[in-house]
Image (spheres, rainbow, N blue to C red):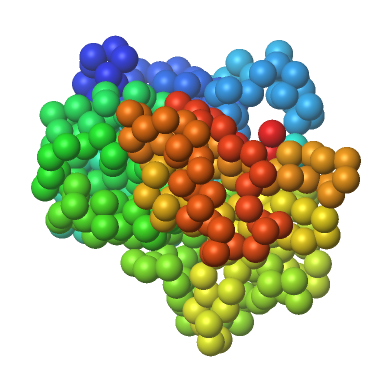
Length: 414
């Protein structure tokens, strides 16, 4: 089974080639700063096997962004010499990684969507703790739909790699190319953001029966999307994951309610402003993350149901202040989508000197033969009796695409 399929280079990278490159390498990069997933993870595994500490930098970071992190741009190319570790074959490699309990520290950076990226250090053994190894995963083929230099990309890589799977690189590809790759490469598992699924699913015209697992993370999952997912991927189990660079993967669910595992119950709290609080023992080390009384505030607004169940409402920073009222953009997006006239929506605030902000909605219409003004009027009519006046968008824009961040999430702060 191959390791990576790169559409851009039309090349299959095999595990045998990967092992040959590991064995022949004389050094590995101390700072992994590359957009090529094969090169990213060759250096990743090389450092782990040699028990080195290393940093993963977003391959989109500019020189100024790197220097703003306190790093010297000139140091990015630095390498560390190999302590010769000879790998015999694929099974030897996978066994070594699965049993690896070294003290390698991996430094990653938060996405920086709400400010300067924060440096977070994880132990390799902690990253591996969320990976599942089983013979039933042996023949899986993954759609690799995350940035390889982000936390989610690393987690998907490790899960696939440790089971000897093939990964088909679909991150940042045109939706139609993604569909072709899913079908042609017999993809069985996909892990991506809700935004990714919203882009791809509407243009799939036939059932894709090979896919047996869809994992969603990084944003609030749109449960109105489930009937469409089931229609396109009839054999797929849908799993929603709560994860972050700071805390890693903590919770998962097959519906909208996350259940706190028994082992975490005494380490999860909710603040008096309904924000999820995680004990410092569950997050990576960082002197840039504020810890208060032993807890890290995720800034995620949640709603608890009983003592151990909660559902995600929104990021605190996403709320829009309109004349003293707080508007949850995700709530309004859900109503707009329910209208049936649009394929995707993005709700955000625009500065206003009188009321602080006005609510704005960018929408991709579902029927391109329908006049723009008719679509907007139909949405307004649908929302009229469903949301308060101050929550209603005061401005609509018909767009072809919804802008996304480096991590594949919607860009809300405009």
